[in-house]
Amino acid sequence: MPATRSPLINVMAAAAQKAGRALVRDFGEVEQLQVSRKGPADFVSTADHRSEGILRTELTKARPQYGLLLEESGGKDSTDQMRRRWIVDPLDGTTNFLHGVPHWSISIAVEQQGEAIAGVVYNPVSDELFWAERGLGAYLNDRRLRVSARRKLAEALIATGAPFLGHGDVERFMGELSILMPAVAGVRRYGSAALDLAYVAAGRFDGFWEVGLNAWDVAAGIILVQEAGGYATEVDGGRDPLHGRNVLTANPAIHAAMLKALNAGRPKTTA
Figure (cartoon, rainbow, N blue to C red):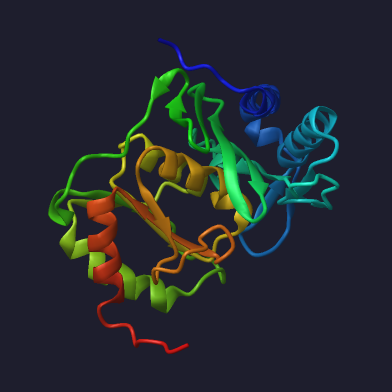
């Protein structure tokens, strides 16, 4: 039986698909885009801002009382009793987009009292819509998702994000990579954290970790993984990956193995 989407998911899906149509048009003319620099290797395209404008308009029209947290333009406070707000990345994988690599996404989540309760990650190129809502499961279009069933780290394909041009802790990343690379079947760096998390939920990746992320990078992906039966924590095991600026997600067995491996030599902290 096809999955029944709630009105909240329908709002997010419609907004993502509308923004996605505009991005696909721009992607077809990627060499002609006007590009500005936000920082070293952190490109912002006209497409990025156009997508955010569409999402802001559509989401605000549907739920005007919700707050907003957007990557490019900040946001607005919530007037909702449950303190709900949209957390939006209008183009996750901007560098891929600007280089003509068809691996990028739109990420929209709803945060309620500090926790992600619903999310959508949409890849307009493949027309894959990953969505989840608290207590109702995770889906790819109309197909129910489950994290992978692999239990051995040696059989696992995991994903990560790497520091680039002054962004991130290179020394820490290389240390973590040197621990995990010899222990797993493969490591991938695809350039869109939102899609990496969605792929964990779909069982395409067995796990994902990255440090130096923002809420808009991970909010939708966290709820996808959790509703697909996986675990999402901070890399050191902390319980707030949405706001902790780092994330470790996987199925339960692989998560435990990755957590142990990454923290085996890390000094213990005391409260």
